[in-house]
Length: 360
Image (cartoon, rainbow, N blue to C red; front, side, top):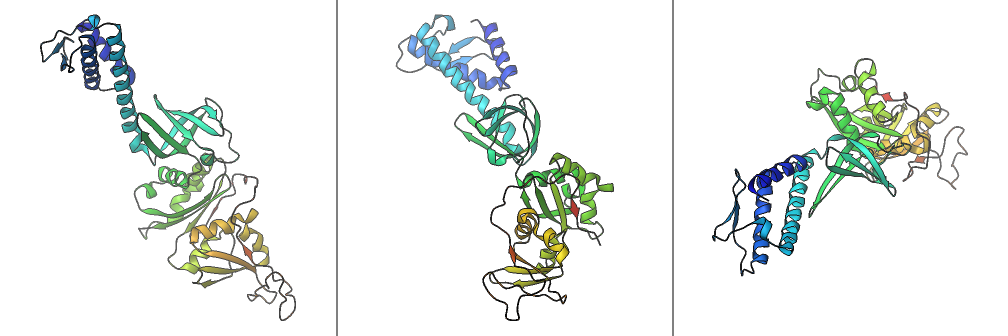
C-alpha cells in the first residue's frame, strides 16, 4: 500500500463510517507500530507517523516501515488493531450523535422482532430497541414500516451503543404537545403532570404563566386542530386536558373530568378524597375498568373513593361491604369505588371521544 492508496483508504473510511480522518490516521499509526514490533522482533513498538498529505509512513526511531513487507502475521495483527480502533471510533460517533436526542421524538424504521421486543433503525447507522413495555397495546408494527417514538434512554457499554425508544412513555405525550402547541414550547403554558394508560386514556393538567393566555384553549387549538393532531399520533387514545389548581379539592374535581362532581371531602391522613357524584355520573366518574378514577388519582396525588349521592340529594355515605346501615339500606347509596391497582384488559376507546375541561 503506497501513500496515495493510504490516503484514499482513509477518505473512504471517513465517508462510509462518518469517522474523523484524524482518528483513522491515528488508528493506522498504532496498527503499523504494533505490526512493526512483531515483524522486526523489537523490544518496544516504534513511534509511527503518517504524513497527512502524502500518506508516507515513517518512524521517529528511523526504522523503515513498509506496510507490504510486514509479513502475514504482523499484517493480521495490524488489521485487528485497526478494526478495533475503527469500531471504537464509530461507536463514539453514534453515541455523540444520539446522546443529545434523549427526550426527543424520532422516526424509526421497524427492522424485526426480537422475541416480544422490537428492533428499529434510526438514521443511517444506529439501531434502537422498543421493549415490550414501551409498546402500546393494540398497535401493530409492520416490518419496514415507519413509527414515531420517544427516545427514553441512550447507553454506552464499551463499544456497544443501546438506544431505547418508547411509544408508551408519558413524556411521549408531553413532547407531542410541545411540538403541536407553541405556548407549551415557549413556556407560556406548562404541563404540570401527566397520567397515562397507553392505548386507552391520558390525563394531563395544564397551567398558564400568562393570565392573558387560556391554557386549555391553547392546547385544543382552533376547532380542536392541535389536540386532534396529538390524538391521531396516539391512534385515537382518549386525551383529557384539565386545568391545574393549587386547591386540592378543585384539583380532584378537575382530575375526574369529564364526570361532574357534586362534592369533595378530603382526609389529609392518609391523603384520601371522598367524592360524591350524581347517579347518572357514577359510571363516567369511575370509567371503564376503573380507568378514569385511577388516572385521576395519579394526576391529583389523592386516593379517591367515589360515592353516589343519597336520594335526598345530600351526601349519603354507603355502608362498607358486610356492614348494615344504622338507618336501614339507603335507597340510592352505592358501595364506595376505590380504584383498582391494576387495570383489567379492555378494548381501546374509539377516537373522537377526548375531553377538555371548559375554559369557563
